[in-house]
Length: 497
Ligand code: C2E
Ligand code: MG
Ligand code: MG
Image (cartoon, rainbow, N blue to C red; front, side, top):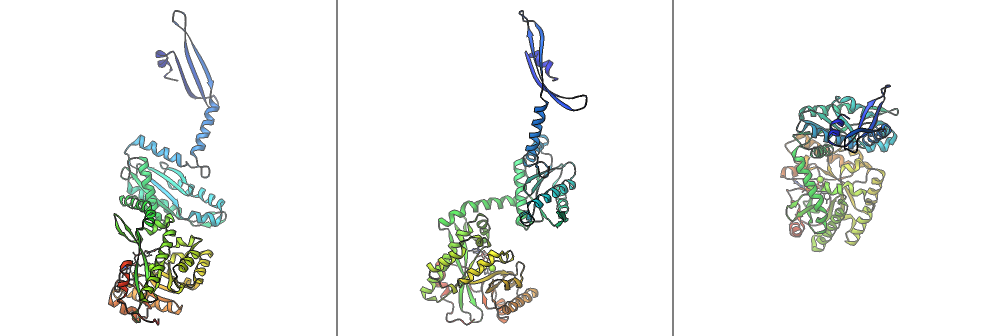
């Protein structure tokens, strides 16, 4: 409106909008067009003004904006609103310090599944309110995804931002009363601060996301500040994701075998199949550097079947080579239990490779048993029904409950290497190891000790009647091409354990 006179001094017309208030203080908007009128001598004689009330159109536009930028459950800003606020902040304040916090409610799906979506929604509303109250007025808060909130803190250095993030965690920790139920929730927070962790909105957002991912991967319920190593980890993960599929088809995967020895007689009983990835440029990659990505991408299912086939074939091949009946133990990831074909494929592979079932052992993780559903229980019984045996791997690293071993058809317990490695220097580990062996024997389980590296450890385990041993003292995992000659040096003969 105010630029009309100067515009009209240069041009023959002007058009503009203005906002004002009526007497009753209601806002209204108008659109005004002004045109100059000239006579035949080209002298300015009149101005013609056309006024239009555009209040309704403006109010409708505001409503649409509000809908587009508001999360209608919590009434907070939504993701586009947050991104707009972040962009504005960078445009306006450049390199001024700000902090971006992504707050993710842990295990929200479980809450939703068990208590229902309505209760889940109410919980989110309460959480949003708590978050709002815990932040200073200067913070921008938005609902970023279903159970994720984003917070933008102004003029905050990394230390202060971390303090605020810890405070947010504490606030969310307190139990909530929703639909007459007391619900305990926890959250994970990823934090990135500008300009230290990013000079533009996209980088800051990506880095806060990486930090959040790390907080979740590290066990949730914690604040993780972005660090450069997270970048390296994310890049490595991307490399694995992009290359692992090809690894299976291009024969880059290999199975190594580590002998398992009867501790009473010193005889060779069998071996454990351990996966390796022989990458053309990076060389031999160990499983803990790619199994988790294989699990996340679902590739563990075809890879796992491939390992079972290779291992069954190897056991058969060793028997044909005159090394006798040697059992083979294969590690199964919990993710493989989501494959409806698991039992059928194990059966088919054993049949096709002509491996007697009693020579096959499947190693399970504690996590699988801990979170076992009725389906898992049935799958374990069906696997057991094929005639093979089931082992509990890495015992002692998780919840170590002997009681759930009774509930599942487990035959073998493998004591984790971390206990064996501290024998004889750590009396606690010696106590635990001997107690676990005795209790496992009471439950009629066979006990395997992993990671035996010294003669003293071997003596201790023999004294406590541990059944089977495995470790560098006997052999490291052996490539398949060297296996027959490596195993030939072990005493053979009938077994009595
Ligand atoms: P695990 O099943 O507990 O296997 C034992 C690990 O300890 C192996 O590491 C083995 O090389 C190592 N080890 C054995 N004896 C000694 C010793 O005396 N000293 C030391 N320092 N280490 C010893 P590896 O081969 O790197 O495998 C790591 C883990 O990866 C395995 O732990 C298993 O959980 C997983 N894994 C291996 N192969 C497969 C597979 O085919 N499928 C799945 N899902 N997981 C696998
Ligand atoms: Mg194992
Ligand atoms: Mg183990």
